[in-house]
Amino acid sequence: MLRERVASGDEVGLAVASLMQAGELVPDETVNRLVEERIDQPDCVNGFILDGYPRTVNQAKLLAELLVLRPVRTMVVHLVVDYNVIIARISGRRQCPTCGALYGVTSSAPKSLGVCDKDGTQLAREKAAIERELAEINAQLEIHQAMIDLRGESPYDKDWLDRPGHDHRITTRLDVGNFLWARSGALRAHATQVDPTEPWWFGLTDEELADVYPWEDWILARSLVGTPPPGELETDMFAGIRAPVSP
Picture 1 (tube, rainbow, N blue to C red):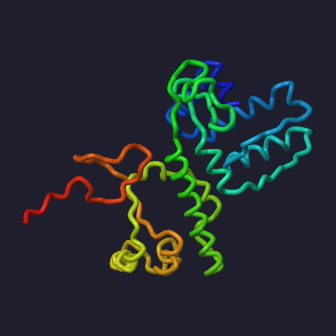
Picture 2: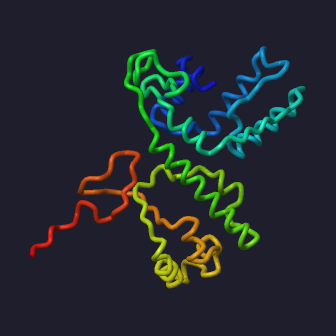
Picture 3: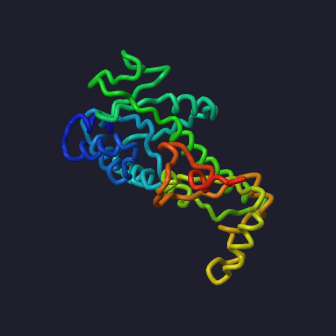
């Protein structure tokens, strides 16, 4: 549906194309509008199949409202797929940064390796970014599930988990599993700003959190030294600025 709109060349299609080419997600408002317009077409009068939609709570709410107005019986197909298979499929995807066309390493492969069939542009590989995003989603779910299992409740509700994220902006991730005691101590020292009973920060003990998510994440604002290439996380905050020590 998105690719069809891109091919149309209209204002919405051009906006969608720029987002897809930048690797960004198309906003719910735009996707909802495209879906509503599409299912209003004559070939959808007797029913239609939505694959990959809805993906968020907001999309699901709109779809529920749209279905009330249409005499169609709804059916949901829930596919359970092995995580490693999902990683292999997604990390094998390639996209043309010019036209947005999608290809796969094992399926829908381009005629010429690494080159778009439509315009000859070199295809982009986003394996690192995709695997990082999936890892971040899984980490959030693991923290949420750990709180449910150990405490019976979690502050990470459905709305929070489905919120627009900024994890794609993370540039630095350090393993602080052995030093979470210092992190917690520093937070508790700011009692006027951080509630020491707040489950967002202290829902798990340091030992429990170390087993689930032993990292601290940062977003680089500015650097005067070299930085890792896009898609790779920095694991040393002092990389590139250490001066050699004279004997």
